[in-house]
Image (cartoon, rainbow, N blue to C red; front, top):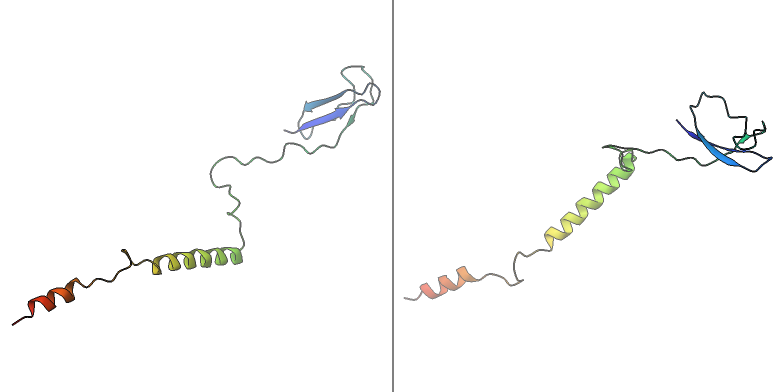
Length: 104
């Protein structure tokens, strides 16, 4: 149920009422009692989404999803290809062993 804001032009009183959408608007001022109250236009409280599944990415276009997938796959490929797995030096253990044991 929305909250409506009202104003009395005679006494200047502004007040709010929590009413159903189908309820008739308030006509009488609670302070001065005159029947000239008017409903004001206000921004309201907005829509609140609560619970799981309400994310801004839920309703993205297919083009956006394709570009995002391409970006994440290219980032993953560049980080894994640049890794040498060590300190950057090549391993020569097997060549050294073969050279030392091949003496006759």
